[in-house]
Length: 176
Image 1 (cartoon, one colour):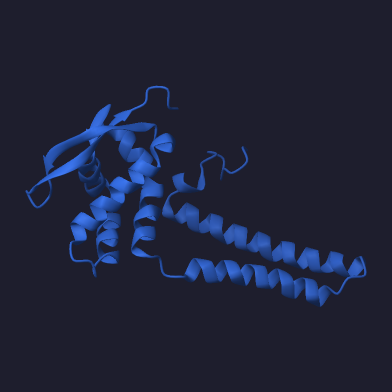
Image 2 (tube, rainbow, N blue to C red; image 1 turned 135 degrees about the vertical axis):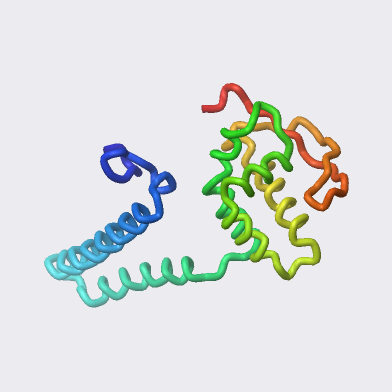
């Protein structure tokens, strides 16, 4: 099995379904538990304070838990959803597309995630515009990773039917 993959299908964590991800997280947590116990035992055999080693290890895990349980900022909610789905959206679009094409495909394929992004920005004056701008900024930051390049601006009607200046993207043929 390749490093960083899960199960006999050698899927990345992102490629696993929800249940597969849950099983993987459980297995990793159990692995960390066993590692801390083994590390604590090793400390005792090497003349170190096993209780202190155990406490330090648990502190590291607690810091990770604290980071994971922090509420995501609105822009982090968008980034998290984009990290999970952007490449599949780009792959599903033609060689040339604009940001509205991307957003429309995202809404069609990942409606619940889109609603989550809107809700995370509920305190903004213009929720749709804010989320769509965050998506556009994300695409601009991730051009290399996504295998796209910004080729200009065009006028296109937004969801609100008001014409807007939006970015046009071109797939880079050498991207894998």
